[in-house]
Amino acid sequence: MIIRESRGQSGVNGVTAIAQASGSYRPRHLSPTSSVRTFAFVVLRVLQIGIALAALAAGAAFAIGAFVLNMGISPVLTGSMQPAFAPGDAVITRPVDVHTLRPGDVAVFVPPGESAPYAHRITSVTEKNGHVVVTTKGDANAAADKWHAQLNQNQVKVVVAHLPYFGRFMTWTSAPWMRALVIGLVGIFLTAIGTSAIVRSEPRPRRAHVPVATH
View 1 (cartoon, rainbow, N blue to C red):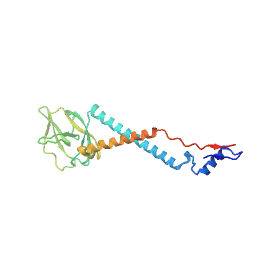
View 2 (view 1 turned 45 degrees about the vertical axis):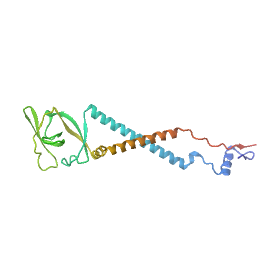
View 3 (view 1 turned 30 degrees about the horizontal axis):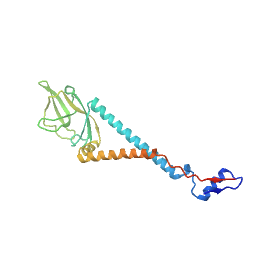
View 4 (view 1 turned 120 degrees about the vertical axis):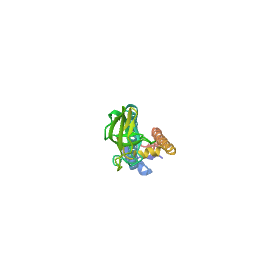
């Protein structure tokens, strides 16, 4: 469409005439929709970066703890140590020399006659025939444990910290179907990020040029 401008009018008036004639001109930087999209994009980008940094930090922390400090993490299944930690929490452990154990430490070991490890507080430490013998008690239990546990190994794990509720996540992800679901969600998330980056990198179509004829 060609719109003829009367003699003596400026270029700005010509653009105004085009807008009035077509009814479709709106400066891009004044579009409220564009502002909302820009804000949403910035928020999404910040969330993506934050999640990525948090994942990297968590991975680095676990890698350092596992390979450098030889730390471990285990879910809490019973309430015998409440209020120190509760079922659904996770405890972080590190190995120490058995001869450094002291009353008050929370040791993780398999007691005599049991098949699963316990994390109970040490109440006494003695030695017998060169081996360390400990008695223990759960903080929430009314009576002490029935055993006198002889520790024949050189090292035993002790609890150094706990993570509230993280044990539930560990229990859930131990199921095969949950592992598959987590892997699938991570794949979808990475695919969404890649697709978004590809779409943003595509060149935008140019606006149609409306010629203006002047005398």
